[in-house]
Image (cartoon, rainbow, N blue to C red; front, side):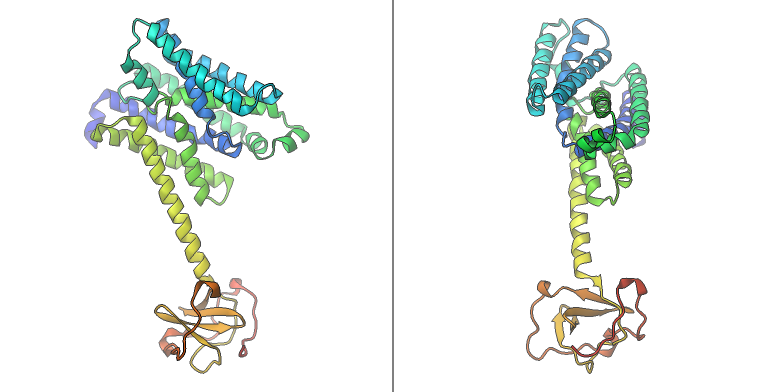
Amino acid sequence: MIEILDYAFMRNALIAALLIGAAAPLVGIFLVQRRLSLVGDGLGHVALAGVAIGILTSTSPVLTALIVAVLGAVGIELARARGRTGGDQALALMFYGGIATGVVLIGRSPQGTSANLTAYLFGSITATTRADLYAFTALTLVVVLVTTLLRPWLFAAAQDEEYARASGLPVTAVNLALSILTAVTVVVSMRVVGLLLVSALMIIPNAAAQLLAGSFGSAIRLATTLGVLAAVGGVVTSFYAETPSGGTIVLIALAFFVVADMARRLAGHWAHHHAPAERHDHEHGPDCGHQAVPHGDHVDYLHDGHRHAPHDDHYDEHHQDQHNEPGPGAAPPTRAARPSHRGELPAEVGERHTGGAA
């Protein structure tokens, strides 16, 4: 692991990955809220035209890509806001026009080669220079600062644009700011992730975070953490596995999403099957007068339409539609399977009631 730091290009790539992993989810969460998850792809295609202009004119591809991407972002948002063209149509025009322009211009450049095109489309850990790193750092600071300052407005406009407009919020200006931030994030990410995959790093960590987080703030923090882990982990993995950095980063982010989805399903399954029962003073046992229902390695008791299962010093509630009906001759639990102390149940688990036989 330490030897990769001996290479200057790997140090640059790791710093760039850290910046990308932190910035991309901060912008992406608002795109997800507005159901504009694919807008990053469109701006990536437009940025390719800017890269081509930079190569053709022998200027900085990062600078020209930034200018063209920002202009494209402003154009698409204004067209969408004024209703002159549908959002999906404008996005399609941006997709096709941007990549076609980029391919044609790179083909006309004396320095234009398929290797140059591939490096920008899919990312290359050797492509990040020290000058690029300075530019990426400045742009990342802008993204973090603006998203932090405008977060309440961005959130309001993303949740309900019409209500936000009726409340006096400058929705058009806020949406323009988000579009410009997206363009900046695309340019920051293109060296490591690639223009064709940059949107994935904005969207997938947020999709995973929203499966687990309980609030918008916690979703942002979790998405940023996952983005940094995916970006840095993808760069390190690509170095040792000799794979493209962009694809490796996206695959790791997808793995995080799969794990998050499985964790959510397991948590929901456990909570559904092991909900605390309502508090009562009645103690279930062989002579309690309630029907015993075999369930795995223990026995549930039918109590006022509920299934109660002894667990430590309280009862869990098991749902009737999730278990088979009791068979004949069901055996009651042993004394050791019952709570050892009568009435020692958490007060917060439900309402208190007396427990006569059902």
